[in-house]
Image (cartoon, rainbow, N blue to C red; front, top):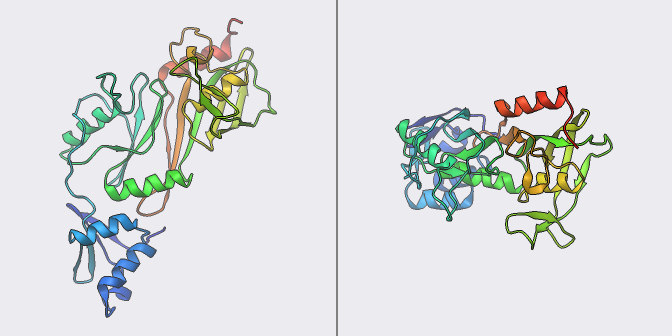
Length: 304
């Protein structure tokens, strides 16, 4: 989709000027519905909901859509510093710190990124439901994408299903990775001997990881990777299986060194804007501890 007309948000409403093709149509209601489906590619589910609740209105030549209704966060706000990488009326991208899960686990009561995002919305005076589009492991850093309304959520969820959301990761791994290793195409399943661990398994789900760039040092390598699938712990499992476990990743055999988490960072997030279709690229700076580890890798060898 690429809507190039003028639009503006006014409170809970989005106003557009779609032109005379709609304003002069003899059956404007049905023509509007078709235009929303074909031009804006609005999900049919949302179109039906808007029509039912009178969320599609005309004011002269302006088409008004009730896309920003007030919503409860759905999770208790907990204040903490938040690193915002990108934000507009439809999307929020947050740089997740290490040691924080994206969403709550029923087994504990720790503060998660979703709690902090809820507090950020509250402090800004916005009544928005907290809707994350994807996740990162608790100790992995990098960008996490949030939808700020139902329209954005439906569009971004579909973009994820269609593999239109790209994520590039940086990892510091043990050993000298061969330049010939470009693709790891190995299925991943549960490890029956360990509840939290996954493993390469012939009966597992298809999993494909691509190495798009590598920097090789004396005892370790820095890799930049992209995913064609999104299996749990995919990068960690694949690299460990290939003999290049991520440094600090004790669950999958990585050196402990002086780093107490996996040296894995979401370096870049690429996604189509849910309303304009524009390609959005968001780069997340490396956290300080990972930069220090990289310096250590390049300056002296690690123990065997």
